[in-house]
Image (cartoon, rainbow, N blue to C red):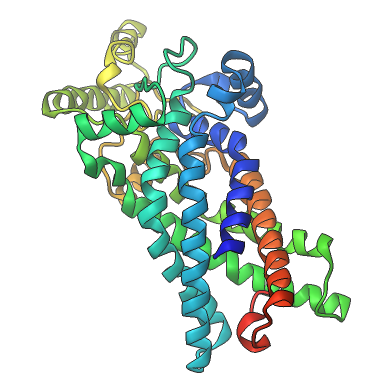
Length: 356
């Protein structure tokens, strides 16, 4: 648990700024200055700085990462070893162990993920450069405001979407990692493949799993960061979405008709900025479409209809880099700390040497 907690939290903190870029790209698809990873990174750094900009939301991220990864690896190792003792095939034991670990850890990291993504999307307090629909003074203020205005259950908003992203990610990550480790050991003809190959196998596993689960991450981010309002606001949003859809089907109509429907995004501060997904694929469709659902499958369908395949993979670049570095760092540190602990207090090799 200690090895997993240290490895996971170190990887998360190293790549938090890139995660912020990914969150902005996924949560604000209409903002052109965040359209590419490089532009988004430089823009946030120049306008908002490091602490409140690129590292906005780092406090809840750390508070969730350290205990969350400790619970994950503790549950993973416990369930995995018991399954192996029962004669379960190795691949199935890794898969089930990853699922069990994520289920237990989600109780901790989902609330922290909600706080983190909202603060990342917001940026600095009273941000003059980007209006996200949020304006929290910090982590404590965000927690109090969410509980007061939306209820404590809002801290678990997007729980199912998060689980449906992280369970497949963990399963794919460890499946790829085990296979890459096997190939590396065959290549080196040794159990000790060295630090460079340890980093490569862990990073490749995380990056590949991150790319494959990017559509789930897009939906999760938009669900968790949406500004939830009362029935009146929701009623006001629905006609806007309907009008946008009508405008999209009448692209050949006069310019005056189109421009009359364009202004709503300005006063629509009550709409869910992080869940609105206008098409960015050519030819551009006028207006915006509100993702007014908490269902990940409906969310995927809506994004595909309005933005196409590229909507599913918005922010895939920073996500791939983030998951690669985070996974490589986490697994290398995890293995190194485990080996150090094994020297201090050796255990049975069959039980303790599953990831090595």
